[in-house]
Amino acid sequence: MKKLNTLQSKVISELIRSGGKLDSYTLFKRSLLSFNEFSSSTNALAEANFIKMDEDYIYLTSSGRGAMISTSTTNDSKKKWRDIPDRFKDESNGMIGEPYLPNIELLDKRTFNIESSKVD
Image 1: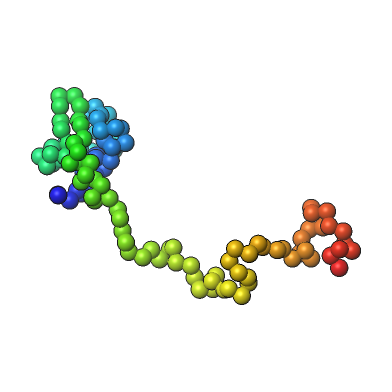
Image 2: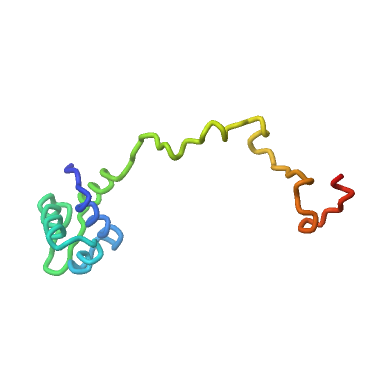
């Protein structure tokens, strides 16, 4: 299967969002591409048999839907922003799943209606 570039995948994703059928002018406006980029992308997709162009409408074919699914971003690389820093992995604070018990001395006495005799 042919790999899609970003412009072609943008056109196909707009077609998928619209149910597989869209007026050509509406697709052009929704894709936010220049007319040159839009026409070259749709012509390349039509040649690859990913879309079918009628007089007024552009239809998404099953091979086009499959091409979009196969080129979807299934990145297996490790994302650095998801890693928890070691300084936050301290297990001395308690077991995972154990409820958090706040320090009563640090709570606001008026907000939580705590008598000063219970705190001391």
